[in-house]
Length: 245
Image 1: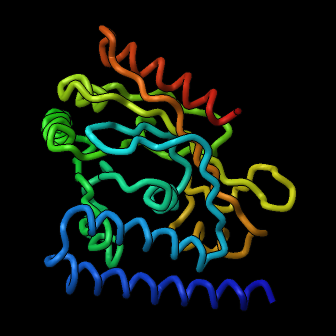
Image 2: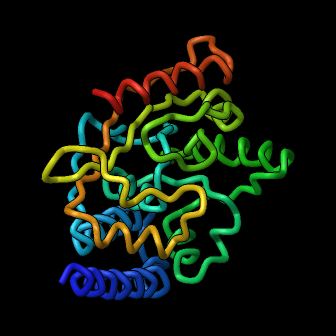
């Protein structure tokens, strides 16, 4: 029975993906940036609902840009959860742009793409992020650079934090957790680490007991004279605190 329900939720989610692609292709050209953001947030909320994932938001997201959001990274699902909580422009690895279906959705949502293994491209991305924030955007990054199982927080890479310093923009730390709705314990269903495949992670998510995605926004921070490395260290400590609060 659980497998049949999982298949039904997967098919509904797939249809919702096609609806999102049609919206990007047919309607986005006529919409203002603010209207596009509202559509992306509503689409992400609907996707979570179709998959039976409840969103719980603690704290207050920044009302408007410029701002940089930094968060821990657990799953492919993180981006949908964060879009549902507060639309932002994500920085993602460049190969996502070429993924079937997902690439079009990510590009339509305003994703900024980076060649992670290219140091020169990281410098370009810092400039692009700073420019986006100066234009009033809220940009989001996962400073760990990869996913973890949510129990341990990897060191934060400081390079992209430099964009907030250049743009003179605040940074808002944010934590992500997935928990079992019945027990309140951590759910590892959505994890996407190691040898996990995207399909395998999706299937585990769909067949898990009801999941709550917990987003905890912390107070915004300004650089206040800190360089990117010192600031990244402090932001990591704050994300750890938010995750355990």
